[in-house]
Image (cartoon, rainbow, N blue to C red; front, side):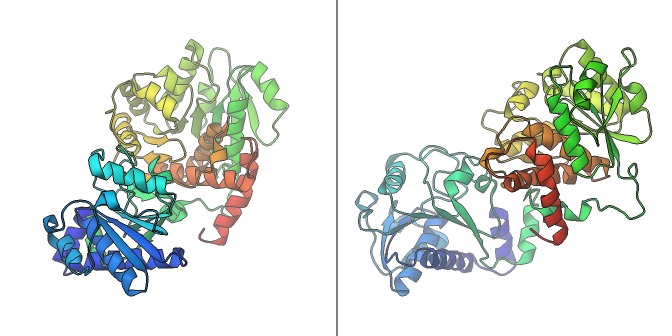
Length: 486
């Protein structure tokens, strides 16, 4: 956003104009969201975020509100556009220690913006903690003060906002946890930056919404058949671990793959046969494994990991998958097999000519990557780094799932409900991804679409859902997708 602001100035929009528009947006949202709040306390910081606060204070005062401004630092020390905004505020300011929280009906947090990267301390920390303790609604400007806008981390004390007003585009910290919970509702305001200014930022990370991948989403053809819609092979776990692979296989079929086959030893297939009908079963030869089946040219996508095991036999089956090439979804036990050896996983993928999507949760990711990640790296940075290292699309799961590609593109999801955190849900996600890959969807778009569909299916199934409910709930979600924009 710093690059966008600088580019806007070169295109003829002054910083003063941008600050005036930002403060006006804050004042407008404050007045509309809290119509009965007549007494407003603005906490203004020493930089441009504080300048936005002074503009909002002036606008609210003109609209008939009672407004007090508590300024962190000296008024004479303000510089640039912030100094100009403060000069247009005709009323005085109070010391942070005298901020009238008891008097206020609404608090506007304009202390620090998205660029903060150090913990708050001293009077700033005290002011933040007093705001949180006041029990008054808080409207944050850009990001809640104390939040790192790049990582979503709270660097020390952090404002807990009810609503956050940001400008032009969201920052990663609005979506990555714990930032998303600290921001409350996020409202994006247009403050008049010219369209050309956005190109200066070279945006690579995007909010995961259908418009990101809808154009690449597979549409069934009237002249198509099951094999033209893709055939997915899923390796089955041993006798007492069949459920995970069955969930994945069912999800791949629901996601639109024309055919899905569970491949594995006969005892496991007997268990599967009691549970599935549309999913096909294929016994793996004790010596040849599933290599002969993967050699069928109709099998373009394979999935390995859910309940697969980590013993020598499982490792051999995984090697056969790599040798077969094609498109692969790697999950669960793969990250134990290659624990601490991500470079070797990348080499196996490259040697086999595979196009792979990895779907680890945080624990599996840590197991795979070992100590290769910086301790202070954000989830977005970690996913991108792992993707570049391994040479595969990485889906780093969680309530803020990040999809990252080796060329630096990423999506961040925010639509997963809390009750999606349940056993087997990750197996379903892997299956949805495999089903979309089988239909020819590019890896980044397939993975991003799978993550979004997974979250929406959970919402459709509702609280109390279990993983078994998700594949069926996909029907309604896909139906809504066909009806138009979500």
